[in-house]
Image (cartoon, rainbow, N blue to C red):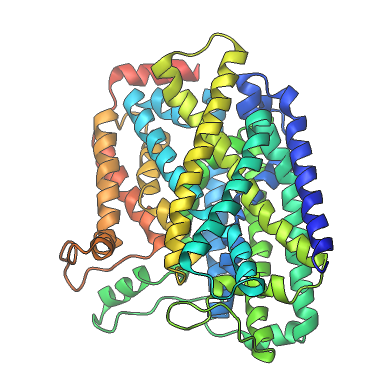
Length: 541
């Protein structure tokens, strides 16, 4: 059997992950233990867990796809803003969360402004994280669908593809939900440590194999297209002058401005206001260790992204020298860049190594999924369930609610993933990274704007102003990004809201920036009541 070694590698990986996850059950019998690991997790394990969450299956396939399509390192420019934002998160956000002793980060907004802001923010997180995590859950199943089309039935229909996606994503979700439900955040973090090791090994071996079969670093350098690193932005020829240049920047995904401004706001939102990411930061023993893990994760992102983009460029070199007629095509007949790496894994890599890389794909999916399940359950239970139905008096009762919530969100994530798989099966040319980041772009600017009012002012902002600000932030971003036009075209309702020719359609790195600015500007116009100022003062004491 040609794939026996690969199957054994994958089965061994599953066995190790499930075993480690279940071993943490005895330490997750309290609210603090289930959600924060009793704040006793080593900083290096927190670092590994942050990396495991960041390097999702979307990155695993999407970033090599970007490298293959663009053949340069423009995407890596965004790392500059990612690192800058982590410095701010470590200096401002994390100390505040430790000072108030929050479990759900939206509890901070409740202390600072009132219960409505807390629930609005938590609700935005729940919906956005559910859509974002569910929509990328199908990504690792791409390799299964591609394998089926290559080795079983090359004429697979969209409906058959959908059922293949469905079977794979349900299996991955159920396995991940088992150890996450029983082991809590400890299971999430310690399985992440194993998963990040598998992931790095998989990427390292893939890069080594490509280098040894394409001519080495010289072949990589020769394939790079300009711009290699810095793109200052291309002006819109229809609008000469300064505004044409600005419009061109806002409508371009990867520029130096997006790297230092757009991506900074993206990371401030995802690492400072997203329960999914912040919760693992709060498991560290103190704010200093949490800050170290957060900053180092930004440093590690640079070589990781260099590695995956290099893999994409080398894939282009390899398939130029070794043409493959069966390379996946999109609806336009061009090579589907997001599926080139999976194709290479299945068709070119040797046994054993192929199994390791497939395990790496599963590692990215399960790492991101386990954290999403734990954070969604924590935010829902702390911000909604306990308020609606009362908080159980015993640790066992509280943990029982958290475990029920984990199972609930596993079912909801499967539902979103199935819907996404349906869309992907019928629209195979969709690009991965813009889809994933785009979901956050419409809502996380509103979250970040409110958090910035709470963290950087002491007497501004209240429930009413924050609600109006978050709504305004969402509407402005939806308009600037052309969401109305896209939805209108999808459902056949005309052209959407009319817009002047000079108005830019902003790309995803800029959406959170505009949402934050608008939300902050509206929310800061409203004063904080004296009662809430005193409430915050007492909470600090």
